[in-house]
Image 1 (cartoon, rainbow, N blue to C red):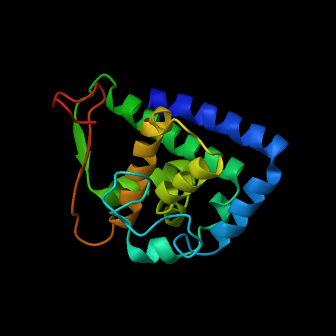
Image 2 (cartoon, helix red, strand yellow):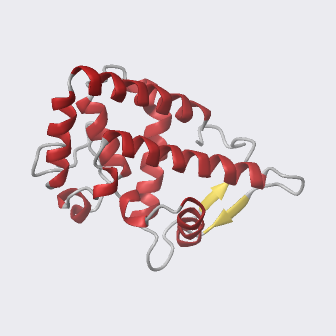
Length: 184
């Protein structure tokens, strides 16, 4: 989460820089976001190439217009900052005097997140695709610098997309890092 915070700072700086030098590029992206993501070529059909295309997003999300409150780049960066701050806060709370590993259903986690941040659940479904679109618009060459932020966006996208009905997975929070090698 600390690396995601640093990535957000860099992303914010890039948005400010592009806004000053080439605001038309951001305006074009905004217009494309009004339409469906695949229809406008912002995301390719899901592939297995390991790029920014997502194999886990539902087709309705891929073909739907991005919600208005995250279309502008600076609004989206603020949106991500709220999410990262909420996740940090949750981990600090768990790490308290009686802290330990806790688990929640996706719906319970999403409910706490939306209540704690005043964010709506629907834009969370678009976090991954919106971040992918923004990184492409900014023409970021080193995507590795944004892996942590991409992980956060992917997490909240999965959370919002699959929180309805019977829980298909659980959210396990471990404040001091994972004791399982290779786990994020």
